[in-house]
Length: 307
Image (cartoon, rainbow, N blue to C red; front, side):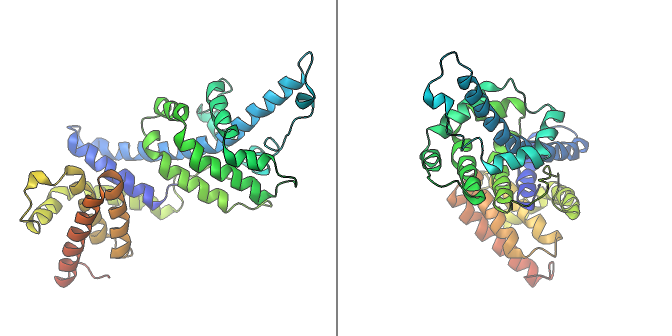
């Protein structure tokens, strides 16, 4: 579940935090692990939310039917949402719900959150279109509904934002990236899939070593990299270059220097996107120019041997 994009984001965040902190260096690795594990928990929590919100709507339907004098509509509700095949598949075949219950991440008492999300879903145009179809939806259409909910409703839900902040200090910052990983997994799901595994900490075994090495190089080489940055930006006063800009450029340089299997263009593009997110378009352009100049010089000096 933890991909290299998220590893890069965590590295930038923690290098910045460590440089601001006076805590001993020995605690840094523990913070990296804690931050990565938080992303794993958030991935499973968001997956389990699909089941919890669906279950909440199912309870509403049953409660309405049990009223003393239910209306015709309450006796014959449109169950398309609660019969959504993706939600049922996650409930029956995913380890995420069990994982969240074991970790204490979800609760049947979080009804205000489930109700708030459900209200936002029911007010959306995509929900109205989905519920009004004449034909029974296909598995792909059921997936599309939840993909739309995850990408448009979850990021805008203030109650969810509040809950994430309460549950874990890392979750709010991770939401956008973790949602991308979750939606990509859902896009690839097929109806015949036997199990949906809980999000693992790392997609590949080598990614764990990549995370540790990138973090160590980026933190240990920061001040040396800043000297390189200053040397090729003589017209810029040091104070004019924001610290986050320097951290992002420095992390990019450490990755370019120490990971021969990663193309320079791949590293540059990833960190330029981070500069856009954490700084500005102007910062991204600045980072692009600096990284390119230093990487070009390293190739000329045979410090690195890759394109």
